[in-house]
Length: 228
Image (cartoon, rainbow, N blue to C red):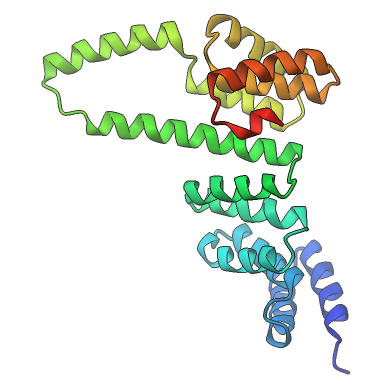
């Protein structure tokens, strides 16, 4: 007896949740043979591809799903996550901005954007270093100056990564303590103010959240998310 599309989807989802990825993939692809733009089949097939490190293959599937049903929040999240994993950072930022214009907002969106911010900041720093062509003496001098500047004006990447991990994993007390510590020592560190505002908002302290968010916006007025 031939399955209907709904039946095939239900069986595919059940196989997917049960870890039977090959069976799930077979069912999803069978659906796409009948309906190439079926949003759920494209999305779930893309999720499987990402899970087995085939991000490039996943991207067109996830985009098709999003185009077919842009009102489904998970489709936005999965596509943005895949773009970040595929190192398509500019495209990821663009899709985040598009999603916000359509009302996309959640803790997961905040976490993805924070992750993207950390990655791009680290990449810009690395690229800047690679472009430098200095003599040994100049390098030594610059390194000394850089260390002093870094010590005075910015926290370590490890601290920022830890802060993000605390927030993403719901450890709001730890995130708050670390964010406050960083903002006290480095008052112009925008990302820490942003996370602090998110923590305050998440824990219901709206007035405190507003202060932190306003500080974040003042330090990076182009960061639209900080306004939300």
